[in-house]
Length: 230
Length: 371
Image (cartoon, each protein chain N blue to C red):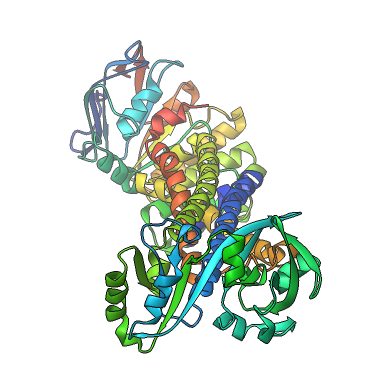
């Protein structure tokens, strides 16, 4: 589903059509024919109440999970198969979650190295990218600190850096400020948008917070497992 | 790849006690295997030494599983002595008796000109007296120590009493812990008059082996003649001992491997979310498997090094225990160490197989829902 004012010449980078997903052997039906189309450079909010299915939709669109029915296309690839999903995660998509999901015993720098270890990026490139990103989020002085020694906001900023380490084309964020206080949440959101614009990324954010929707180029409302554009 | 290695080491550092228990399991397995196999190999080597003293062939009764049950008659010995290829024949009657506090004493019934008596260092008595007096026996140095006796004293061996005619020192632990009897005395004592257990045969020329073997088996179908090296390879008791020692060792290591499996499984179960994050960050299933096997490999490597240290220390301690001196003469061979290390690694990796499989099948989206 697209907004009426969408520029139709901008290429579609992400599309989910008639997506169905259930859990617990079909007993819990979460998505019932949801559809989304995202063009390059858009910042799209998947907005809905808790349990509406927005996180599940995000997982399907990003290739973290597979739909029971329906099709997904990410940058022209079908993430139905493990190899395609792996290639997307390594090269083209990044993730930020509600919980920072960092490895607490590692330092900030070591956490940022993880996507590069996975993709086998050279050490010198890793180092310069870490310095660039940590500087952009104001954490360059914390590189050698372990995650457990960082504040909630710092952890989420680290998680954003990790998601951007491999310069993804699409960033998926699942309630990225859901576990932060109001002020920190605003800071993190602003940072996320700024970095996304600077890096020319497409962003899909699942959120239930209305206050951040103004900053998005489009909102897709998710209700009872179905999508409505706004 | 240092960053990948640091991820592997991270988990071991996180759960130090769990890792230490696992390392200890492997270490005990390696130590047990090293000690058991080396001691058995040493024992076999000593036994081989007894039979191979200045000889090329061992002749004994066909189809016996144990040389203690082999019977070769003195007539057969004389026939062998008469063969054209033979330089000398040394018959030996082997028996086991017990005395107070010593359940096993090996008795060697040999003739006076037996090379082992000639080569031995006579600490008490004189080799020229051997066999001249009735009911006189000669003790190995260690058996004289544990029987607390010396030349001229009377000792009880089994149901009979003997006079100690001398004490000798040999290069062989079994002989040093045994009792030498003149052959005729041993035959009478063991109720095997006219019989010996085995004969060591020295040929005039080693090239005559095939002819000699053929001659013995033609002269008596009840006997078998084996070259020393063939005997060592085929003697069923050696094979049983060898197999048993390796089997016990492998069982010890399997227990260690189960420790590794348990550690890895606990580790994976407590890190399901972390594994999911690694997958989200682009780790392939192969890389996840590599992490798990890497952890298991490091546990096995540390356990092996510690286990070898423990094993060598244990052997050194056993060498110093007075009751075991002479009997324990461990033979530590490089190929055995290599085999033990290989077994430890394979066991640990087998232990990590299921945890690795489990970890590689973690679905990121599902695991991220896991609290």
